[in-house]
Length: 96
Image (cartoon, rainbow, N blue to C red; front, side):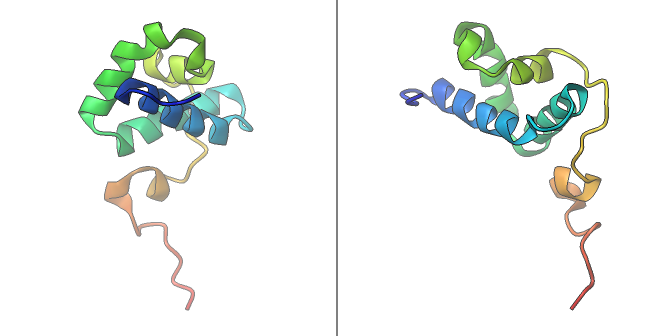
C-alpha cells in the first residue's frame, strides 16, 4: 500500500505493528497492539487512526480494528519494561 496521506501512513504503521504480533494468540496480539499504540503513539495519532479506521476498512488489519475498539482480554506478550517508555530500563540486564 502506498501511503499518500497522513491517515494512510497511520494505517501502514498500525499494520506493521499487527504483523509483528500476528504470531501470538489473538487475545495477546490485540493486547500487544493496543498497548503499543497507547504507549508510543501521540494522542493525535491515535485519534486520527480511530477516526479513519472505518474508512480504511479492510486495508486496516482486523487485529488493529479489535485493538482500537475492544478492551484487551489478555496481557500483552511484551515485557512491561519494553512496552511502556516510562518504564525503560526497569527490565534491563546488568550483564556487562
